[in-house]
Picture 1 (cartoon, rainbow over the protein chains, first blue to last red):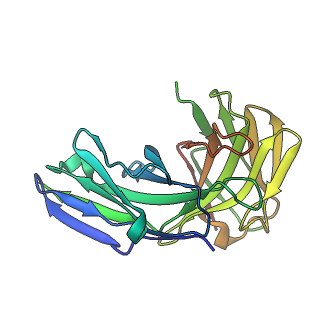
Picture 2: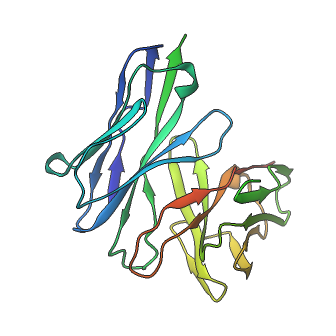
Length: 118
Length: 115
């Protein structure tokens, strides 16, 4: 069965520090997609990135970067030079291409609350 | 304007009352979803719909019903609200197709409190 684990419940860093949020997943499917979403204090869910299982290239978008390693079933998210506006709950999620129900549903981890201290 | 909107944004109701949460989207997506978020549990799927004639139960559908009035509208109803349905509810749409996993885009959420 599919599962997403975000072992870090809460992390606090001082502004300008780098921080890595861990995500470990389980799936039997060979084709799957991984996502990261941000939930700021205002409550909405903001899509950050989507990755398919055949593309292990790391991705960088400004201060954000993602490291996908199939060998360790991990899809970690690093924020470089953190800012107060990065304070949020971050969710990692998995969707399987061969979802039996055909819905390609998202399975979420329980989230990591990041607090950036000024 | 937001692509996915939810109304109301906040609602307080009493046990036993019927309540409807509404979701509208302008993204033109066929697939729509309802989730609830509880502290420490992440998001869990309640119902999903691939089009107006295709509605499916998710992980936690008991106590809920849905209606897909049009491609752009997907409503969630609590027929008789109970306190453990107090949660943050999200609607989402997806650009996925049959055999193609899409990206889900979420509405702003509805905070529901059942007293």
